[in-house]
Length: 73
Image (cartoon, rainbow, N blue to C red; front, side, top):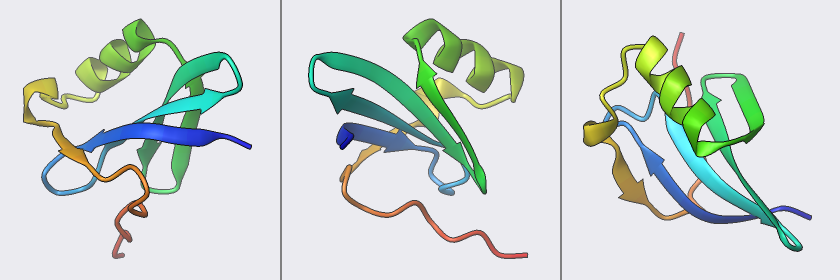
């Protein structure tokens, strides 16, 4: 079972970055709408957010147990 140790998201909730742990392994996960990118390094997270035009300075820390926001169509 994976444990989410920490999470940050954009103020609008469109992008969420999670720090995930399973036993001794630790990695990052990005949630964007229905897309989930898992087993990422911090460099990969930075690259993906930069390529998407997400200003990483705008990410806010959130409760890691909070569900990702629902997307409206």
